[in-house]
Image 1 (cartoon, rainbow, N blue to C red):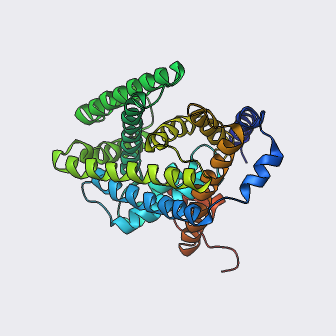
Image 2: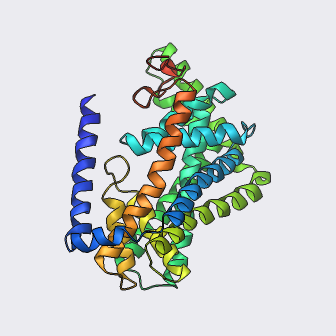
Length: 331
């Protein structure tokens, strides 16, 4: 493991430990243990199914970010593998890996990476929309509203930058790399050209209706597991609470943390449910149930998808040189 990777692990673990401490410092563990026995496992199972459906919805949405998209099945499988990798590896390694997993479908990694950048901007804008809705549903803390404005600013800046890249192509970069060896300039130019080409679908008006409809589906399947888990632990709260929890969780997942976002998700759920007067014990129980229902099925199914393609989590493709399948030990 390289030094930067070790440093990333260390920072993530420390932040996760801090937020886990903040989420659990007032918890009475005996009451929490008793409450575990009353969890409705059927509803937890439905939340797990919803997590997998959300992966499929994201795969469906992803296809509208390509001019010549692979099949929804291929995109959903890459999403699933990327999600599982993010669950067990630091620094959102799964996002980089899935840019290379589409090579078998004829998509160049830079073009796939461009679509993932646009996808992340769409996610930020969706979170901002949910935050605006949550603002009318519950008294939100000032720092969350400020974070929402910052996110909107980042998303709009990203849109402007991608638009500039799309319009100008690699021309500004040609001057910056003029001092490099010719072979390097050629390779960089190829990557930039592929990236710019990958941005093309995001600027196609014909893709906009599908992108909007599929994004609504993604939001629905983001809210569904929250709603199921609230009822699984006996919290009979209004539907607005699912929106508020989803907003808090979305911002918490932006915080660098240990793989799986242990701690940050727990803290977000405890703070969000505190707005509705929920005590620490049921709020923490909800966070643990929600976390398990989202982490376990996507990780298990994602690892199975890796295995079916001859891949291992620690050797996922992340550069063109290693983008070919790796044989699983024992096979």
